[in-house]
Length: 65
Image 1 (cartoon, rainbow, N blue to C red):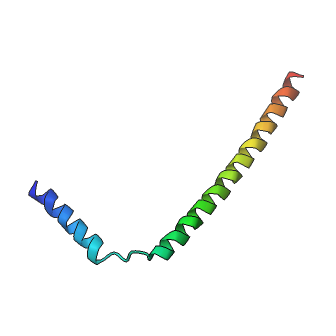
Image 2: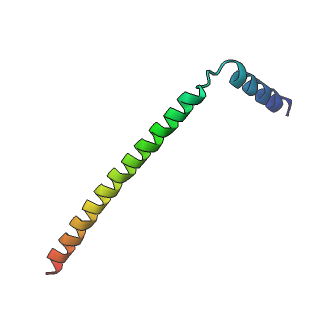
Image 3: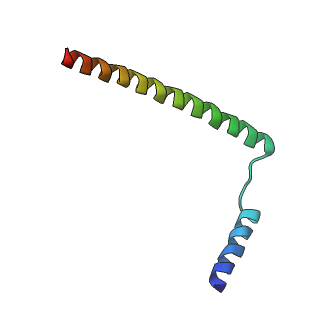
């Protein structure tokens, strides 16, 4: 158990002293960037899904006559 507590203490020390944290402005701009790319990616997936759905529906209608 002492090893686990030591690990937690060292982890917090590492985060406090050695990690370079972004500024508030950088964090806001990166959050907006992630949100925009997430929306674009989801729209792209939706578009591909819609196209494939229509192609598959057309194919099965064509097969069944």
